[in-house]
Image 1 (cartoon, rainbow, N blue to C red):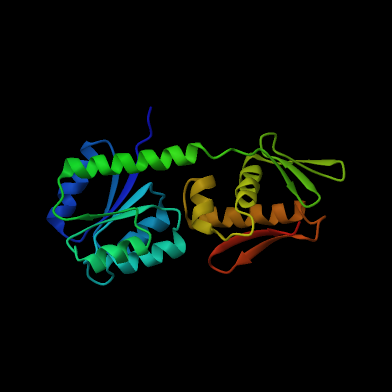
Image 2: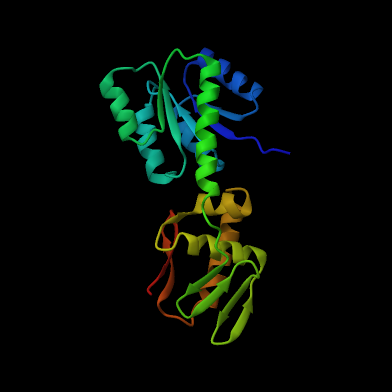
Length: 232
């Protein structure tokens, strides 16, 4: 069964939001509707999405400010603007903030769906070209994620599924901040208090496994996430 693409719609206008959310659901998307920017940030912290559609003119937090916050904490999420702000300066600002498209209201619903499908198809094609790596060298260690094995000084450490998944995630993003939320949703399937406690336990285990090479560190960035650092 094909997995539905998940879209976050951020739109404060009740009529527009209802119409678009119902139409996109009818077209096979899984749709979550936030009516203002702060609500959108809560939803982003709770779930993963394939695409966000942002209005610009909203109370409390406008779409441009929301996009700036998304660039800080959810930089892998593509987003488009769908707004009545159509001046050239607004369009340029939208693309400067990283929007993959800037659409002007009113827009035909069928055109919107075609644009979304084409965009998601391009993103899928780009992702499919990435080569999946199973074997890694981490300092003195050799790590095979497929076999769930970590080898150092001819000693083999058998990892659990989650230990292997977590280490692979950190290695793939070495020297980059891995937010708690991204790790939890990717590996545990849900970002909540109990899973975060479980993540802390697994990080402690990995640190112990990797302690034979002092060049390798799993740093805790307070209230944000973890960084796996190792020097060549």
